[in-house]
Length: 99
Image 1: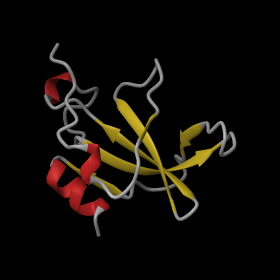
Image 2: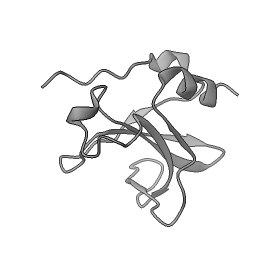
Image 3: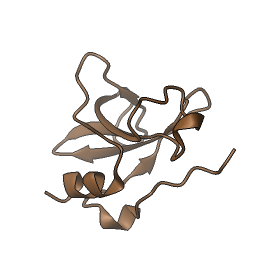
């Protein structure tokens, strides 16, 4: 299997991403904090055949909760809320963060 490539430079984003992938995740995830709220950015593999669901978009941003504290965050997806962003294109993701 090809190595996952993010498709964007984290330095192009207006926020700081923190690696959040755990061993049981099917794709990489990163958390970020904006206006005192936490969010997860899920990054699927660039090749759809290596994704759990080939129809899933490459990039998804979802609301998250911190079950830890600011010093030792434990960030998990808030499945009670809708995704905020879904796209196959990295350029859409960069635009989303820079508005």
